[in-house]
Length: 185
Image (cartoon, rainbow, N blue to C red; front, side, top):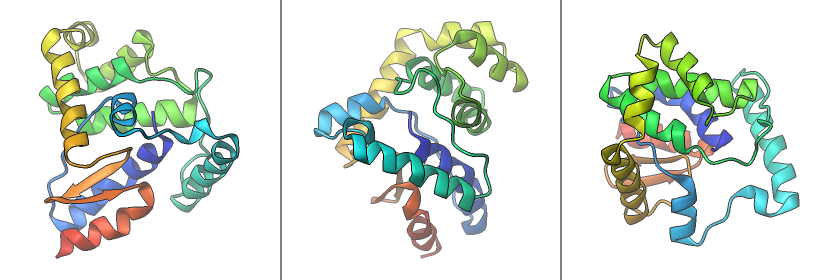
């Protein structure tokens, strides 16, 4: 749901490699985090939304990425995409899945809750799309997404992207320099 998470996703694997860190992707339900913490997203204030769109595109240019494009269904929830990410994690493909989904959503304006679009991404990863999407609807996957969301809130998260180095928390794509410094320590 977050273009800032997309931006950060394009950098975190290189940071992990440079610092010999282990990267662990943790899908969560952002509306649940926002509700639990009383936070609101940038689209709740018109001026903030307009600035955020400029800002994400400044970052995209800085990272030499294609311009950020808002999907037709923006703002959206990413329930199916997040549940599928948990199944992709079971298959050892969460990083690749996340990267491809972020690119499809924020560079190609794809609907992250469209099963056909997700099936296409899963097919590119060599995963059985029908089986993965079916598993994503299971009670245990729903419970894991809820548990990840609750754990993030308990650890202090109030938005995304949120990074932890040990117990130290960093929030925002613009904090990746500090994440890398903490990893080097």
